[in-house]
Structures are given as C-alpha cells and as structure tokens.
Image 1: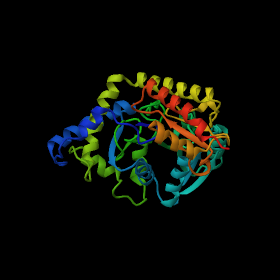
Image 2 (image 1 turned 90 degrees about the vertical axis):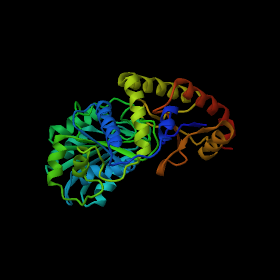
Image 3 (image 1 turned 180 degrees about the horizontal axis):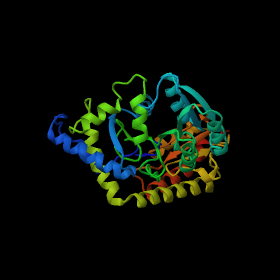
Image 4 (image 1 turned 60 degrees about the vertical axis):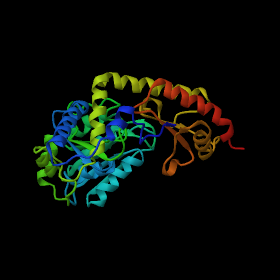
Length: 360
C-alpha cells in the first residue's frame, strides 16, 4: 500500500525493525544512551545549538507545550494564520487564557508581512507571535524567514509549528531566530506517531522563567532536569525512540541539503503531474509545499469517491480537504520516506482512478 497522506507517513524497514526490540528500563543506562544519542542528532537536524527535548505525545501536545512554557494568562499573543493548523495554534493559546489577536489570511494565500508589522507596531503589549511554517491543510509553506525578520524587529517571541516541515524543508532554527519550534515524529522523521520534538531558545527560557500558565506534564524545566540524568520526566514511548535513533542516522547520512533537494524535486513532480491531468493547485504556486500537494477538485471530481477508488483499486491512500475545504480539494503527501518512483506511481494511479470519480 502507498500511504500518501500528510502523516502518518510510511516507515522504512530499518524503522520498523528497530521497534521490534524488547522493552528496556527507561531509568537505566541503555535508555540514557538512546536519549542522548537522539537528542544530539536532532540538534543537527534542527540546525540549532540550543536545547531540544523529546516529549511523548502528539505534535499538538508540542504546540501546547510551547504555549504553556512561555506565556501567562492574559498575555497578548499575535496569531498569524492562513490554514487549519494556524487556527489550532491560536485556539490552544486562547484555551489557556492568552488574549489572542487573530491575524487571519485567506487559506492558501500568502501572509501579508506589512499587516504583521502594522499589528506589532500598533500594540506594543504583544508578547509572542504564533506562526505555522508548513500548512498541510492548504499545501503551502509560509516564508518563515521573512515572518521572523518582522517579528524580531519588535523583539517578540516567535513560536513555530514546523510539524510537517522540519527535517524536509530547510528551517535553520538559530539563523532564523525561532524561539520554540515544534515537530512530530510521524512526519518527515519516518517513525510512528507518539513523539513531539521541540527546540527552546535562550529567549524562550527567559520567558519560561516568568510564565504563569499551568504546566506539569509539558514542563520544559522538568524535561531539562531529567535529560541531564539521561531520562525523561515521564514514561517515554520507548519503541519510537528506538526507531527515531535509527532514522536519524539515515537522515544525517543522506545529508540535510540532499533531503531538502529530494523533497523539492519530488514535490515538483507531483505538481507537474496533477497539472498535466488538468488540475490546478490550491495554494499560490510560489508558496506550494514540498511535503504535501493540495489540488483543487474544481467541482468536477467527487473527492470521497476518488479517495475510495484509489484505496480499493490501486492501494494508494491520499487525503481529502479539512473543515471548509472538505470535498473541495484532495491532498497528496510526499514527505519522509518517499522517492521519485513512489510519487510517479501515485500519479499513474490517479490518472486511472479519475474517470470513476468524475461527477455526473
């Protein structure tokens, strides 16, 4: 089966084999070696010299951790959003008592940097900015470097959802002055769901020292204290650590630049392929994601039927649209363990399935 959704993504054989190992003592020396190994390798993949923590939970848990570790109830937060996951980030902050200023842009359209600057200039009390690097709901990548430049002009915290980009699309965390960056194990890291990985800058630690939002399970201080002992505060997803330690070796052996180039190359094949079948991309093409391609169904295709035919007759699994885009787009994931041949076979299956999914 070809699993081509934005996540979970396929696991290579090395990943699956690693997970078959017996359990070990998560307070013992063997686990400490794995934790230290994965942490150091993740720092290379994150392109940071700062702290990186592995938290057992989903990417959304990592987003919540970013909020509660750096903010207090009543803090003003600017949410820069142009998709479903940008809205989720804002909802999490609001749910924990932050005063969220929602700067929403049309889904699939670029962030207006002038609007971001104008908002930050008008309200000096804004403490942090929430941004999504890669918005899988719309198949687009925001220009995070440019967003960061505006945010840092006003010396604000920058909290970044990079769940579906980090490790696949270039994001040099230190160079771009990102304060907390979140990713999830089931995306480009080629292992099952269950780990959220976060980086924490010095500026984020300064905010953490004053932050008053309730936190316990997600507390970065606890994560840091236990990491010094080669442990996690709570029982970790041990099998996924086995797998991640293995796939990080694959990632570093391939090389980050080669991985970014591979994803860009495969994404272009996907974009060209769907356009050759008569479709248009949902986002502005200059912002089209290298990890997921979102395609307009153009009222000609029954998306549910297309997904069904691909799955049942071609062993290919793709995703539909989320929320207001349900039935209007379909999405092809191409991140992590993916080759040019993989995406070409998906496009071939798509061309065969389309006649059966056309609206009458």
